[in-house]
Image (cartoon, rainbow over all chains, first blue to last red; front, side, top):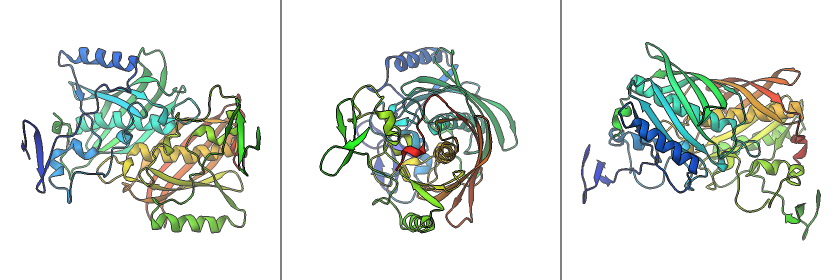
Length: 219
Length: 219
């Protein structure tokens, strides 16, 4: 339940607590490189005609789903869980990213800068960090397709080139087919110029019917 | 080059800097649950006959490779890159883990507690966090097999059951075959009792010949 709860601030009332909306982190901060900022502006300009839209991103997964907050037992403020990709406070240290959803609802692009706290081999992003970027990009696409919760069932990744930490990349995901509760997707991760294909992947997501959160919950 | 560099402390001299050895983080801390501590002690007892050994783990990937530190340009102290799985300071918030290597050199087991900063869906570990655990476990096994650097080439994961944050699990990896520079591995992630199979995976790693670091560098 969203309602006014203070001087011009929209807030959600849950269990008697008045909570201000969470901070959207899918916007530039001091940790973004010039290349990251330029590509972000490019994607914003592309979105101006309505063909794409930027998806907000918050510190906690639960913050994406205000209607679920009302069902959560216990306070919703204070320390607690964090979304894996947003668990670092230092700007630029970890994942800095913004996801764009195509108007078709069947394609997502995640612009991402992989910081120095995501290292595997010295100077390069950890394979698990790349898997996390891919899982998030295809998962957001699957969520848009399903319009209800989805879970990762299978994820197959081919790592084709080492990705330096600090790199700015675009993970581009498409739905390939939708069979009942199964959503099959593909993903390619390239540098912003498209010259280097770092990784490609396929994924299977399963719709989960027992909860109703969806991207529609995002402003 | 390792040599004495202070009052009883072994340290590495690199570029004129005297550096104390890094802290091994693959040991109990205040963030470990009772279940995590008990299973760790169980695995230590099993290792007492020499059939397994615990692998140290450090904040930075580079700390695993003291011989490489000598070749690194610039200071080796101060803020800088961090290993993806060790990038959080708060004990118990992220990955808490210890990897054990079988005497055969062809099998690893990673005992891991997945903290609340690794969340995907509310209350459950992110698919990328599980992928990261698996990549690290199979990668350590591949490194032991290759006795030289390895890189992830392919990783295919089936997610079979949702993994609650706070869960203590064991990722168990084996080398399946070794063909030239290719190392094929499997991995299963279960709860400590073996009742729940959370995920299973296959992986292909490639030996990289141009660097020489290996687990032999670990004490």
